[in-house]
Length: 84
Image (cartoon, rainbow, N blue to C red; front, side, top):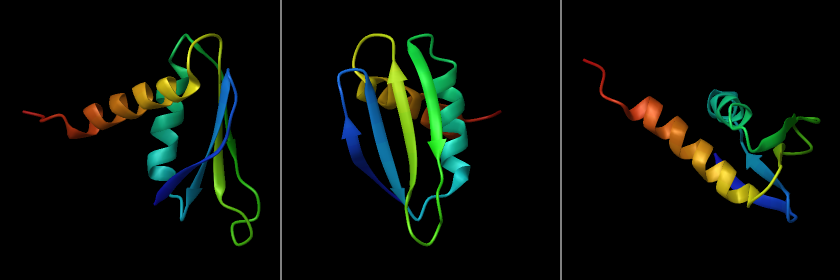
């Protein structure tokens, strides 16, 4: 799965996903939704053969890309943690 920047403003970011799999997008959305600084998280899915899936994130303050990076790290840490 490839991720790319579709659009970025001061308070929002839209990411596109080529050959997206919801297995990664769903936990990422959950992590973003639990961030108090994130105002809105939306998954955009149009026709799967015509358009890539997209994720829209709007923050109350700060850099929206940093919020996505923080959520990505949280998901990575969760799934790479050694369970004993």
